[in-house]
Image 1 (cartoon, rainbow, N blue to C red):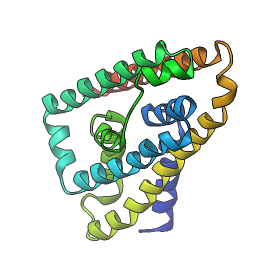
Image 2: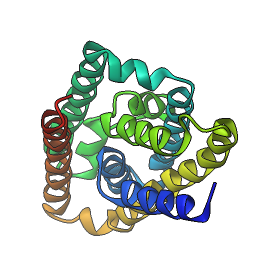
Image 3: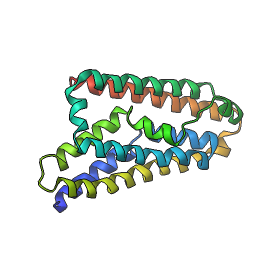
Image 4: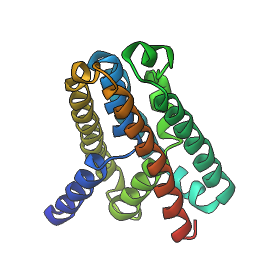
Length: 205
């Protein structure tokens, strides 16, 4: 892989990993409501799930998703429904105690599985496979090089958002601050759903 190809990949990885999305929003919200230790399960699950997804796309599964619209839309509907359900749980959480009872619980296995319902994760994996892996004589070597890079980006970005959320935890415990914060996170999740659906519509997916 040339240095220019690697540089382009790093730019894509930075933009895709550190811009707000369903994973980073959930990492922030869970750390703010339950603390960093609780959020770490999800933070670790994201890169593991995406790494598995990327590996499957590199072996050809991604082409099946692209070629069969019912499967693609099934992923979209299930994933966005789950995000909207989480948003509804966040909307009514006005105190740390209420947040606990609202069960904003996304464990490690759920976090891994959520990547397969995250159309943004699919599109990123497919873009990287199409641009850097598919049709190359050294496809296996490229996959083995790209996988740890992207997994690291996924971990660091979600950890960064989780740390930010945990730093706000005690400040949010006073008055209606947590309610406002959780509703902002809920709106962010809903906005992500709208953004992803609009992106699919405009691309004719």
